[in-house]
Image (cartoon, rainbow, N blue to C red; front, side, top):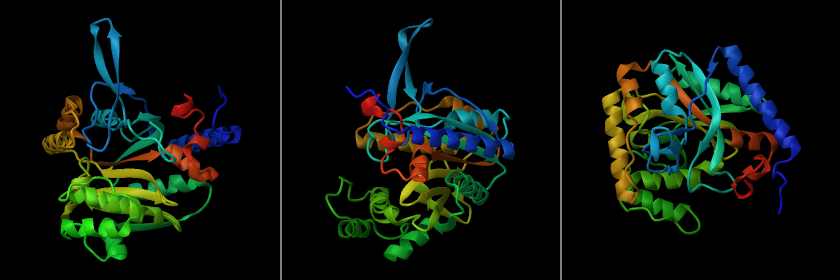
Length: 323
């Protein structure tokens, strides 16, 4: 039996240095480090994310309390923001079921932070500054809207083109077998084109921020007031790898509830169970979330790019098959 870590000692040192750099960056910026529970009673309703479950048995819960391992600390951190925490960040573990590969491990390390009074561009600039600091080099930065990206490569407007044209384009553009996607699933075809046709080429000359995603793909973000067809969301890519996902955060509790309900309806259509809404988050939003932008950044992937590794198994000490 192989008991040794899959990551080299040098990769472990690089991880320690990265974590130190991140903490120095936020200390200088006056952003407070916080901790929130890894296991909670609720899980997000995003139909693309599948939970890992556990339970607590003990005083008050003789029959067991079902718990979910978090896929992100977002909901708990927003409760801190509503309580008046000010700018906060967290480095923690996150968990997602069904994800395993060169760039996926079911347990991974995430950096998440929230900036009151930052708009999306200010947050993107801060993300770029942090990533450059971790990479140790002044890489170029590109900002491009989701619409402009599809216009550049496919000469179409992703929010307006008929869905059958998207399906036909996917068949022509993507080699190999395609996953099962409903003929009328616009977001399904857009996501397939993004991940398989566009994403591999993003960030090859530096950091690429793609912003203003379709509103249907950003349930936690505010709509763009100048164009309600898109939401104030961005993703960051470097060397063809998705690194970060950010939002100008939705603060309307009623609208957020409606979006969660819509995601649960999509889960039912997908054959997945309905998940209970996080009423504590909704109560915090109702109390008042400050105007803020927030972002989640995958630290394992960032470390992989920093050291030039080909797979997460090279920079995670014990991936799931060796845990």
